[in-house]
Image 1 (cartoon, rainbow, N blue to C red):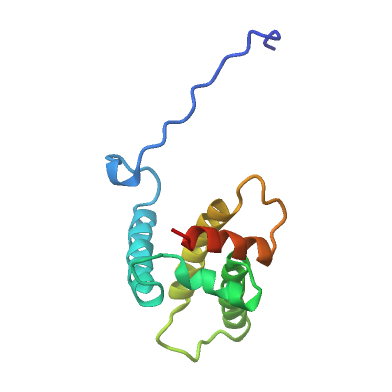
Image 2: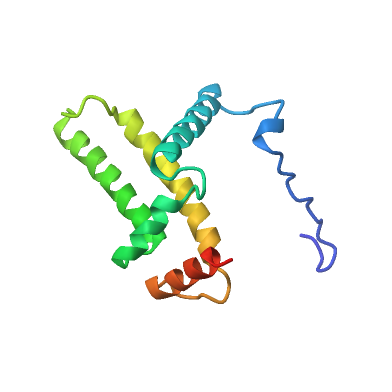
Length: 143
């Protein structure tokens, strides 16, 4: 047992940007899925949000008194409901969205939820509420 004050200090793990990785550990298919997710996100973002604000479609739910984070959670719960239904029934009627597509959508929504939380939780906001988010959006839009 190390004496107090003599503990070994561990070096922090160096984070390397994905684009700079030269050696990949883990299953190769994992990295292929990350690439597939990025491609899907880019295409859907083009259709839903456009280029001026990549999270615009999520911020529009504020008009219905739902925070953007809650809006993403609703979308994720829809996908989860679809997966649970598939597990019970063993069949999907909508053939142009596979169960893998649904799982990838959930993974993308998870990352978007993280981005939205990071953007909207400055230390002084505290508890999430729609009026504070609306105020933040107004401040962001003002020149």
